Structures are given as C-alpha cells and as structure tokens.
Image 1 (cartoon, helix red, strand yellow):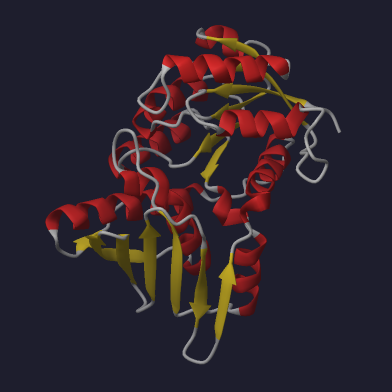
Image 2 (tube, rainbow, N blue to C red):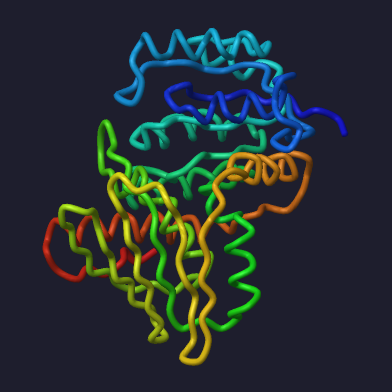
Length: 297
C-alpha cells in the first residue's frame, strides 16, 4: 500500500503525536501500527490548550519521527496529499478548516466539530462550498463494543452512555470533552434528537435527550472518571458494554487511512452536525436550567 503524505495542522493536542507515532515510529507496537500513512509536516502554534514550552517539546518528538514542524501554513501543506486538522481549541476550527478546504485535499477534522452549533454549521457550509472531502468524529464512534451493541439491539428504544468530562483550558468543557460520550449516543440511536434537559452537580453533568419518535438517551459525563460504556435497550432486551480504550487511536486512524486511500466517508456529516447540536444544546440547558430544543438545521 502506498503511503499517503499527511500534513498535520495543529500541535496543541497530544493526538498529533499519537497519530504520527502510529504512522511511522519504528518503536511503535505492531498491534498499534497503522499502514498507508506518513506524516511529513506539522503546523505548530500556541493556543490556550498548549503553551510555547509544550509546543517546543512536542516539536522535538515529531522531528525524531521525520516530521517537519513549521509555523507557516504554506510550508506545512506543501507536498501533502491529505490533511489532519488536529487543533485542540475548537474555537479555531472554522478558520483553519476554511484554509484547508480551499486546497481540495481529503481531510480528517478531529473532534469536536467546532465550539458552537453556529460554527459547526459554518464548517458544513464551507465544506459544501468547496466540495470538501472530509469527516469529523471521535474515536469512540468506531469502537468494536459499540458496533456489537448495535448488532444485538437493532431497533433500540433507549440508550444510556457514560464517559469522562475533561476540563477545557478555554471554552466549554461539555463541548470539548463531552463529544466522546455524545458520539457514542449518536452512533447507538442515530439521528432524530429534538431536545435536551441537562443538570450539573459535583460529579459532573447528566443530560436527558428526547427523540422525535419517543426514544430517549441519557448521557453521563463524569469528572475525574476515565471509563466509557453504557447500555442499549428495548422494552425486552438490553446489551451493556464497557469500552476498551487501548485501541482507540488505532481504530480511528485505520478509518482515516481507508478514507484517504479513496474509501467511503465513514461518518455522514449530518451525524457529526447532530453531535455538535446536542453538545451545544446541553450547554444551553445547563445555563438556562430548562429543557432546550436543538437548533433547527
């Protein structure tokens, strides 16, 4: 398989290192290795999520892997055949996505889609304007335990999911880190969410999601607890699961490799938009103390 030359846009997230390592680190465990990709460059800049010292440390790690690190966008994308947008600060996603979309290269936009549903819609419109080949998702969407639950319970009526609530350096923590758990819900129940009622306490956030056909989802985001799982149910059956996160990076990067090599888009953009919509609506419900409707798209 020919290696696709990848430019990584952003170094304020550990994902830039984790993905590059799985592409080309000679010391990477063979069970974590992903074929068909090679990171050739990385655009590095400081954000609230990583300071200059951290950027310099990560730069040294990438350079050991043969990745050219630069502060110039033009240098970063020169010679690239595909792009991975790894900007940890979601408020910057619109700006960098538009720059990248103009290049007409296949793209992976790391989670979350944006910082608000309004900016998520802007990205969707930019993608349509430039006919961009892109997908955006959390690794949780691709975990085998999720696929198995969907196979066992094919017409679910309810889903409960739980996961971590990491604390964002800027913006909304629910959006920045809750995306993982909401991705699980969206994969399990599909589209059709209409409203959300959310509550926050000293343990984290709980959101109740109503659907247009009387289904219900419950999302539990826990501070300081890094375990993911849940259950998928009908009135007669239940399939519970706990996620093995040890393969999360590889699982997502496998999807990226297939996509960059001409495979089908693994995630409908409307699914990604609904995740963004649910995240944004959860924030609105927490602030208002009331049930809030999802934004009409």
